[in-house]
Amino acid sequence: MPDAETKNCLHCEKPIRGRIDKKFCDDYCRNAYNNSLKAPSYNMVRNINNQLAKNRRILEEVIPSGEEMGKTTKEKLLSKGFSFKYLTHSYTNKKGNIYFFCYDYGYLPLEGDWILVVHRRLEKET
Ligand SMILES: [Zn+2]
Image 1 (tube, protein in one colour):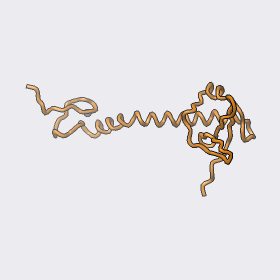
Image 2: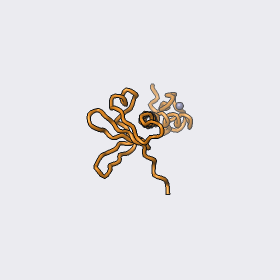
Image 3: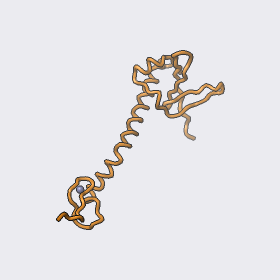
């Protein structure tokens, strides 16, 4: 006769001994299970952070050293692995132009395929 009261650990799937309301063998299995649930969303956060850092690096390379802005094309940015999907914030200037930023580097889509890249120092903490 199968023992209907036997439960298996949600992590290692071994039968659990002891109290009937237990879901895990021990703290190790409970922590491992909870961490595995968190992993996919954490990976998503890490992947987006990596892409933002990459975007920033690509924008940084567009600006010649010693200058405040540079010009490139959408195609060139894409070929370097830039993702237009991810940005940290946007900024609208007085003319109504919207700049899209990855941290302190931003871009403004221009006529055709052109992109203006700007460096803007982050506001100092007061
Ligand atoms: Zn277990």
